Image 1: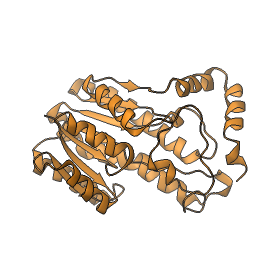
Image 2: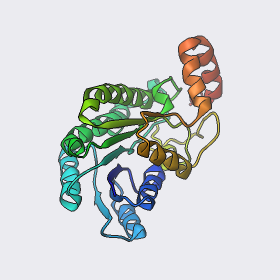
Image 3: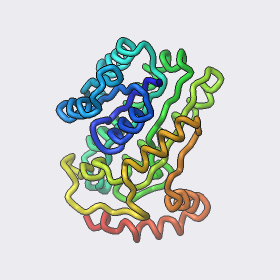
Length: 262
């Protein structure tokens, strides 16, 4: 039995991951900013011996330290940290309050970095695993999501460097690059004023379910794979961006034209 800490665990991909790891026989430490929903999820799993929950904001330094200590006190170790919590925005740079950019960066990059640093001593003891839910948007530009692309790009680079630095100490890093999932992250995307975006979501490729994605992640974690690219169309887009950027930008502007109309 592994001890798995999952951020953003009350809904979407985080909840699907919590169920998948729990079904595998692991103990799960769940955290989310939505306290009421997190309590409901804890009850749904229904095994106090294998479930611990702590609600809070992972951008808060004191909460992050308390979360790691909670995992240590309850289970004595930590085998896998899943950096899943995230937010996004759908707004042009010229029409966005810079505070929105700061918020996206704080949740999507700074929080997982600092949480990981706090968890490293326990992960080193367990020769454990760090799972980062990135995005193909971190590999290529997407209209209306400048801060999200920047945050996920920074996440990628940070954890690729960390992988090289800690691999001799037994810690494994899995970077996951989903494209479009049917989860609350896009339903709750911020607009330029910091309130929920009102225009329709733009996307390419096939909309996938959180359960489908969670199954692939749990399997990749068990196999200690370094990367997971589940959507071949998005993978092709990232390659096109590097090999023929002008063509990629022309296609992207056409596919995400709704963003330019805002």
